[in-house]
Image (tube, rainbow, N blue to C red; front, side, top):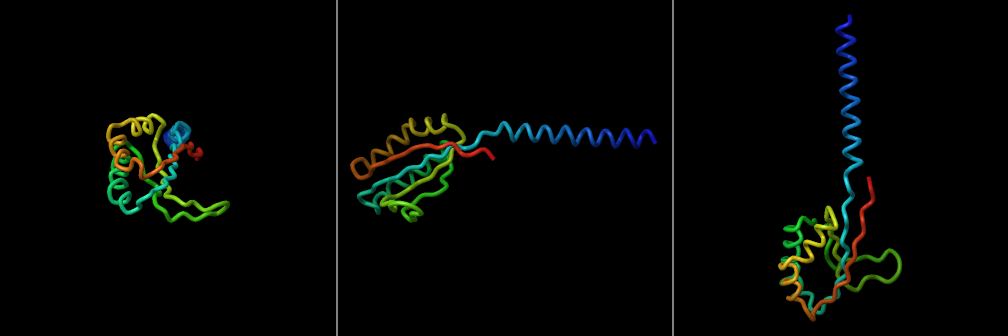
Length: 128
């Protein structure tokens, strides 16, 4: 009989420790940081052909995830956007800075110099 109680107690203790560990890991996870960019483009076809594919590849190479990009923007409130919008997620502000400071980012940005104006900002994701 004692063996059954010991086994049951050991199982419950293991379950409890596992639950505490999982809770601790969730508490340590930082929410992603989102980069929202509005882009005024003079030549949409050239932008989509020459700049956007390279930009997305550079984002992925630097640990980012493109969540949304394009000009199909629907206004829910206020003036509708008259530009392209991109939403990108990164794990940290350090990764965002590394991406924006990279030679690849700067070289690719030169391809649309004078043809596109960018407005970009970040927002931290909500903790889950």
